[in-house]
Image (cartoon, rainbow, N blue to C red; front, top):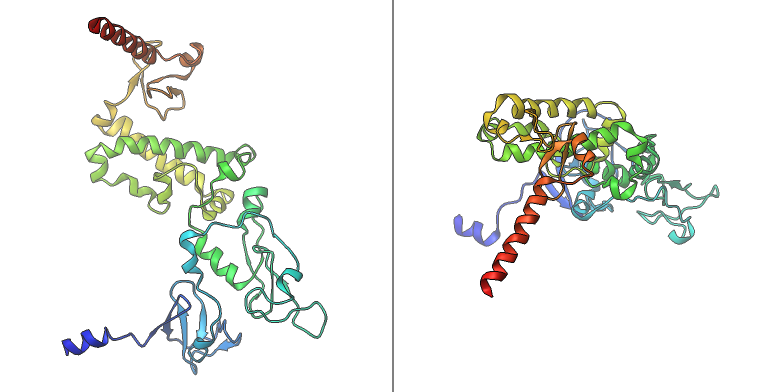
Length: 332
């Protein structure tokens, strides 16, 4: 048996079929709320066998699997970025008056299927490839802060659903003025920058690692990796007033650990060299300013009164100059 299995390969699961990147799994159920995306007719779960793609949610009668024309959108995600032009329409001409997906002939005359435009791609589709589903369009959000759902084709609908939590929007490059227009977004940006500073404390703190403090952001892992990329869901949650209080709570928990609960983290605080008060400062404090060269921390007011001159950098520069002079004297 083992020899036969090696020759013939592992036995395929009859309930799983792979078509154009889709991983179709046989579904069971009596519901008739689903529609076949291949033949565009209702799936009668009590009477008909049907499959759903485990990756993108494409539904199909089992008998229609061999006629599927749409590539699974999940296979495109690894190297995909959003289209950032708002509804980039070119008209039916460049499409040769055919559906952008299945190539069915289209016309605005009554004798042919009426074209339906996808607000995401700007292209036109037939009624079988465009069901008037609506989705939030990333380009409209980034450029206009517009979250009104627009009509999209089935391919775009599945793509936008799968991409909604992927952090690929670098707002600073796409529309940096958005931070001035949306105050909540500006606050979130600052909190994210401070969380990354706190992360450096946690990586050298045994208690923080044992308590897995960073997992408080496990639903948004990009928040502990960088501070400048966002997902569409991040922006939707910002508009809905969900993200800012949630992130503020996590930020507060992190600050309590560093300032009050952990002696090791407390010991990594700074004293302002410019005023020599006993107040302990941390890089994420509102009243603190951080030297961009040596990362020393000062009171913001003290630092700007000195026109941003860092005493530590001045000492290091002076010492380096003295060493180079003494090195030259010894060689001579």
